[in-house]
Image (tube, rainbow, N blue to C red):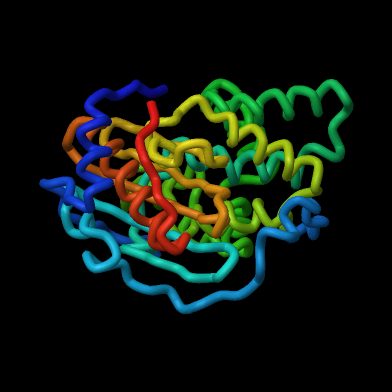
Length: 297
């Protein structure tokens, strides 16, 4: 689903000396079930607090990359320990691409898994793991078919809304007419579902750990994870011809730090990839109190 890029060393040098990746500027349009409580995995309880601060609009003061992207950008970033939030066009609509495989996986566990027989549960587990590690599309299509037949996209959209994802759709004709894609979301919507999953609020502790572990073993290191060195990065990328996104959580000394970045541009995919990697490093440093990041590959 992706490509490996080169020229990262130059970008790393630019980033680490506080320079600006040139040629970047941003704008976009907008779109007008029961929550199953779950025990938080013990490993998360000591890392995350419930404090929240008002979102702060991201400016060039926080990151020199702001206003430098040739296309549309949506950003939502949060220190889950301190509650500090930085945003840039957080509610602008983007094609969800493969990031939607995360909420779809959650839907499978919330609505289908418990009543399935052991053989079908094994299928669900295999499909979720492959969707989150290698972004498998075959299982994704099968699961979407099953969801559409059993629940329907309108009910799922309502379900997403109750989870805080007010602009996220799957196979939605209204969204396709408005935006050209039937699966759409925002940087904030996808960040919210990641945060709730990470905190163990959506599914049981075993499946929460299973999903987080799968995303920690993603085979796509070129965006959010590129400059994070040996830190644990739990993330899911999404890519279409003109859209690239990465959403995830980086576990560091002063985190965890949640970062959700969506881009749309006519430029080559490497251009968006480089921007997401550099912006992620900048956001991580700002929200972690100055922790250093660097390119290590």
